[in-house]
Length: 149
Image 1 (cartoon, helix red, strand yellow):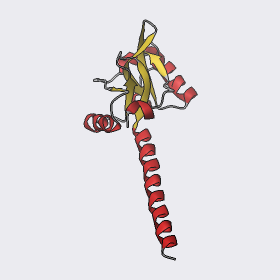
Image 2 (cartoon, rainbow, N blue to C red; image 1 turned 180 degrees about the vertical axis):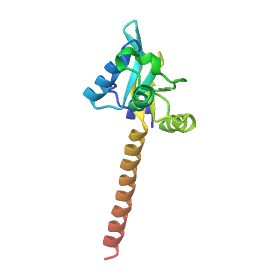
Image 3 (cartoon, rainbow, N blue to C red; image 1 turned 60 degrees about the vertical axis):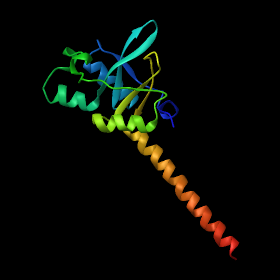
Image 4 (cartoon, rainbow, N blue to C red; image 1 turned 45 degrees about the vertical axis):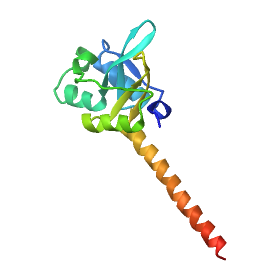
C-alpha cells in the first residue's frame, strides 16, 4: 500500500510570498485546514512548507498581528517533512507519529508535489479496512450456518 495510491491529489497551494490574509481566504474558499507552500521552478511545484488554520490562529490572531502585513513564509514552522509517492502508508504514518504532525505532502522523485496525505485519510483507510474485515466475518458466519442446516 503506497502513499501515492491513497493521497489526495486536489491540493490547495500558495506561494510563500502571499499574505496571510490571502492564505485565510483560500482556506475559506476551498474549505480546507491547510495550504501547501510551493516554489515554482521550471513549471514544477516544489513544496517548501505547510500553513494550517491553527498557524493562522496561534501566530496571527492570538498575537494580534494584522494579516495583511504578514507573509505566509513569516509564519512557517520548521522543519518541513514530506513523503515520496512510493513510500508505504506505514512509513508515512511513522513519520507523522515520530514528528508529531498530521499532514504530509506527497512528492515524486524529482520533489514535485503530487498530493497530500493526512491523519484523516488514515482514519478513513482504517475504517474502510475494518468494514471489510467485519464483512468477511459476517459472510463466513452465514456460510457456516448455511452449511450446517
